[in-house]
Amino acid sequence: MENLKKNSVTVIVNHIFFIIFVINSISCPLRVVESCDPIDEEALLHFKRGVNYDFPPFRKLDTWVPNTDCCVEWQGVSCDPANGRVVQVYLFSFRDEGGVDRNFGVEGNLTKIQRIVLENNKITGKLPPTIGYLTALYDILLSNNRFFGRIPPSFDNLRLNSLQLSNNHLVGPLPPQLANTTFFNSDSNLDLSYNPLGLKNIPDWLFHYYELKNINLAGAGIKGELPQSMSSSGSIVHLDLSSPLDEDIGKKPTIAYIQSMKLSNNPLGGTIPKSLGKLIELEVLEMSGNNISGSIPKKVLNLEKLQVLDVSNNQLSGRIPPHNTSFLASAFSGNPGLCGAPLPPCKRRLYL
Image (cartoon, rainbow, N blue to C red; front, side, top):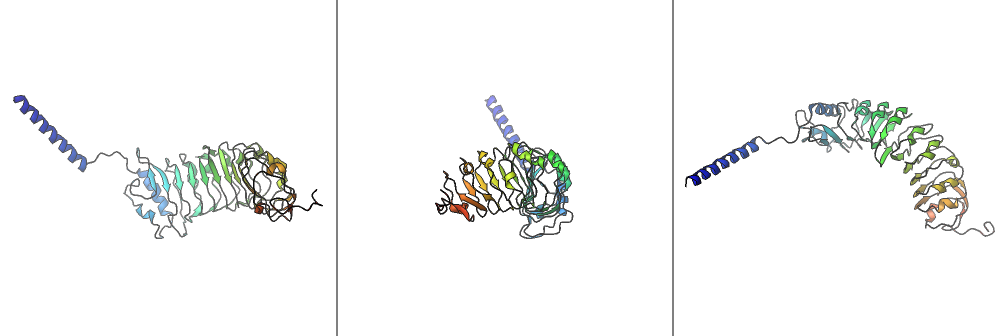
């Protein structure tokens, strides 16, 4: 009987301690996630002060209030829960109107940040050199803004997966230091399209990146010859140099493993080189809107993986070679001298 009483007392005491523990847990919860690092908080507030964001309904930066937890309460900010350091700023379309961003900047104190996404915001200003010192950064997505000036040489410190700066007002020349930038992912991409770069030549080092798969310089005002290093570059998969590019296409080197080649709407002359028939992985070939003459090489038209072809609106002539893929007539239209399927048949007296 006495043992039973002792056991009952023990159970009651245990229940009391459990209730006290629950009450303490509710009033003073265990902190399993670190709050925002004060250095990162100040760096983000510096960014906020540098942009004109007061355009409803895009008021994400209204949540960026001093002395609040930027990891929890600030829209567009992600942190590492282990240490409270900011790892991502994602502000896609945080405003729908442009503004004068006289003091736009990204402080170098964000030493753990991995991704900066500020696309489609009409931000005005120069690219801050401090971005180049954020060595944990691997994605820089700043397309569709109004950045002007040159790409800072400090970007050579970075090890990137993606550098997307398209549709801005950036000018050349590209700093040679960019040759030291590392692209590490098997699907890395560099997009500088639709900037008035005005390059006299495409830099040779652009094709030395081992892992860089996608290069987009469309509409970037490229002139001059393509570098011979392209012929030994085995990494590029997609190359877009659409409009404008000034050079004779007959001198273009080949890239053995390229899958997509877009050269449309350029003042390209010469003939289609037979060497393109060696591009065994080529799936897309677009050459429309140029001044290319001569005939279409049979090997090019019969590349095994070629699915999309457009050589329209040139000065091509002769019979279209027999081919296994069913290309549309529009792929060959606008070449007065071309004939044969899928265009009207050739006149027998000319093409016996």
